[in-house]
Length: 260
Image: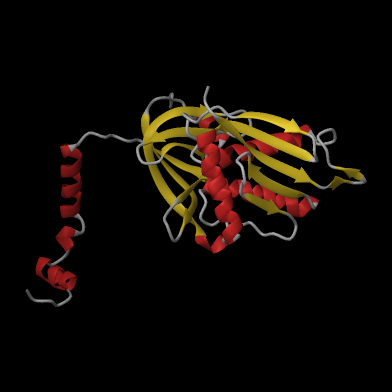
């Protein structure tokens, strides 16, 4: 049997006059924790991730996420780095977003989060009203992207999105207006297309925060070499801007007066 371990997310505090416990912890709060907690173990939304099981236990509120020991060892190193440097700027975007979510709850509700693993002498990180585990806003800037790949899923009941299997980033999810999917008449599934999108990008590393991607435009994508299309572009260039310049003058301008 494969060795297992777990992550423990302990939340302590009070709700009004009552000490926080699993009996008075609302199901919506549980769902929101789980939606973010998965990113701690699976930041890339890898389809081949191991099974992650869950239980909630007493002792304030203890969320237990059990999975293979390999993932637990990796996460233990991450929380050790967070605790040592008191920053989450180095994390994968989805993992950093999960920590920001926990920090936001801790600040608003005056809860204390304690996150550790089942390993002996586990590293531990605490979040409460006095901590500030948030990414530096200046690092993440708005940017425009073009993604090309096969559409594997499109739709959604409340929040619609398109799933694109790209060569470089793997499977990414792009938030898409329901109105676009309603009006689009062709079947998108399993077609190779391009999508223009906007989202956050790290200005220092170039890393894309795929959780922020918003649909802008669908692009027909033809992978084969089209010599007729390229010839047509050359003809248009000759008739337009190339016919209006002096080749020698233009070349001197480009060379900046440099003589070989």
